[in-house]
Image 1 (cartoon, helix red, strand yellow):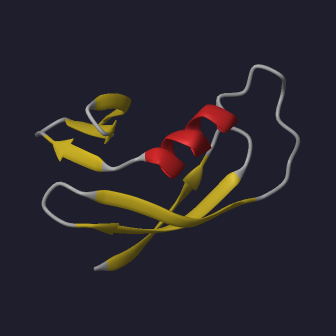
Image 2: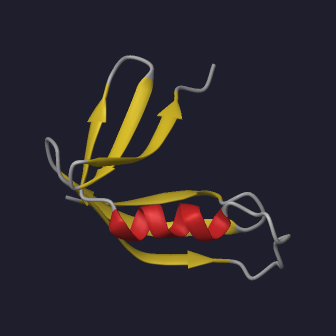
Length: 79
């Protein structure tokens, strides 16, 4: 199933498509606005994580994103 995600990379707005099944995850068509980020921005790392994500796991409070066997991102549920 194809879905879309929108959000913020820290200094730019982000839109992407994603497909997911029980454990596999793939982001595609990642686009961002072009506001200049400061030199220590996490944006390049965040976009790279999205481009290399292959799977995920969800618990009651956490979202784990993996590239192969390597954990590349961990998100907490918004309160």
